[in-house]
Length: 483
Image 1: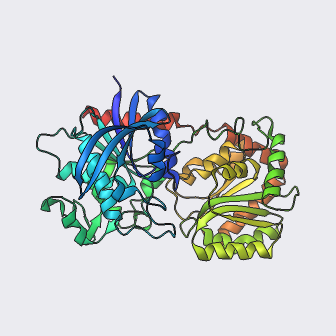
Image 2: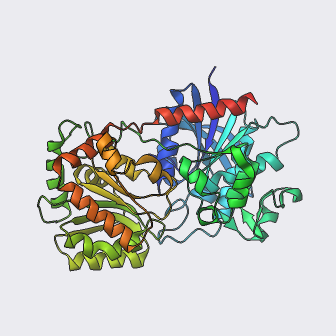
Image 3: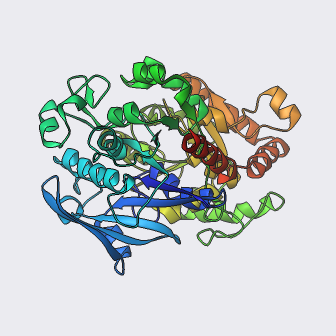
């Protein structure tokens, strides 16, 4: 009999996505199914989710979920079990999952995701007829309170399953003022240093980390980094205290969706042995971005325009990139000041630099297929997925040596090149000199066509499917269930 896991998350492809969390949550059911683990995903009933669950079956009704009525619906996500918390007062809103159309956070996010956690805890502890789980897997701060409710507010005699808390990005912790505690429906004992209290307020991620039987991050290096103040964001002491219960499991990618042989979005399919066909994709991308068509390297960036992603430093090196023969196509959104600086750079370098503000999934595929190198200058990166997509498409990653970027890219140093295992370029320190040096190095390597082709083929042959990562999660789940 397969292990039954309840996966609790605020987003999952293809129903709702703001970042890599959605890709991972959407991919895990299939990855774990291959390991004999059946994953049921619980999502909030945002408009996009409700639209996909029109024929859903009502499993349970909540008369008052932190003061509001709600229903639990049963549907499918890519052929796998899906539960939807239909709570219109919390989730039937235009805008994004966490904020309005202007990007401003919803002021009641604490209540929205506390209610979501309360419902998840009820499901996991057997309070919903027909729903029985061996383990609960909570993702990021939006699901953290599920583990706190299981720990502090489960019905007497309820069977509490073991739990795993996965940190996709420590920078987002769900921190709220202390006055919300009295409205959460938790006993007074939960307001404690090893409970939900965090620096005088309520920490949703912190609460989940304290309650979890095991903690995972999305890469081994990030699991080590968050033990230090620079990356721990104030929770490094907690991570240190959990010791061996914290481990890193690198993310995989959906190799059916991200496959240059079958990708419906790109101009010309290709394989590691037919890389010459990539030229058609490069020409198409140049035309789409109104860039000059030439044989020089075309760098791409697909990113949130934020300090974390190093986009402020990228702005500074654009003149250098163009000056040494490179061109840049960027797709992203975020900080308005960074976006404006990018636009100014594009005006300064017509035909060499082109910017698209927003996010377009199909365009991101075309960029990976047509770009020569993808720049990922993140100051910290729990795992990162764009560099993995770059590997799959022969778009050579140029990455900061941090977190999952360090774990997934093999630098083209002399030894790695001679051994034939290099897949990209590393640089250390997100500042003008390290990044500009890395870009110069990429341009130099690009001019050696045999070497560059070897880098492309090495990346395309790397295995970053979910097979190994799925097995690692399955092993962890079984170990916890056995204890």
